[in-house]
Length: 302
Ligand SMILES: [Zn+2]
Image 1: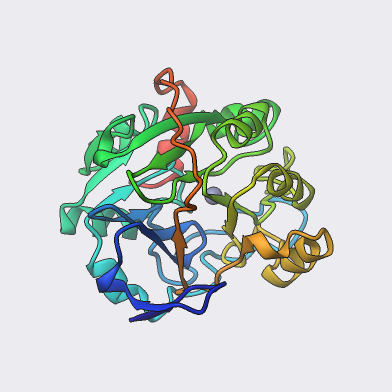
Image 2 (image 1 turned 60 degrees about the vertical axis):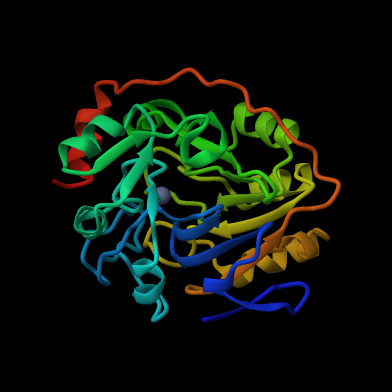
């Protein structure tokens, strides 16, 4: 499959990835494949057919069955080449029954946090804790928060991951989050070459926002000096932001030259900037499952 660098018009083949380049293929919602070192890492596999899951919008109208759109045609070939997986958190739009079946059948090692690891292991996955040194990378786990108040507690502790492979661009997978001081501090200190941020402004119609607002994304992008890729868009009933609307706002803010809003199936390629500093990640404090995990593990399906 040919891929095109979004800014420089450089075309290379996925199977011939050059040393020092990082590839990111966006499949759908939060499901992406990252070419990092020798690995092709499947992140957050939601692989269900259209309409296989109930709607997530509980109040306020607009409830539809999820996912709203199919996986792109390129997904079959891309998924077949994956060598490992990262699950940012165990919610059904990040790892669903079809995703778990794929991971089990392929026997892929699954890297995740201490909150979701035990539950995913019980569901038959080969689980490892994603911490510094995993997959040959410098890694920092950045705590975040999925929502404010009681809903934030119910949705459980969440975190993002800063991943840096020697000689390649670093990437911060923020994961599902609202704008917290910890996320802002991590962006400011780590200054990742690439940030992957969920941009659907999800809201279930009860309990407040469960993802960054568009204003939050503008603030985040202003703080970052690297490239910013937005996903978690136009695939679920509770994510109202559109790609076109988001891009128009970012361009109006003068940020259009550093942002990417890939179509489903699109491959982006990033080079490590020559002047990029080597950042030493801080050790995180591992979190363990709380009472709410019992609820969210069942919500995510058996
Ligand atoms: Zn999500």
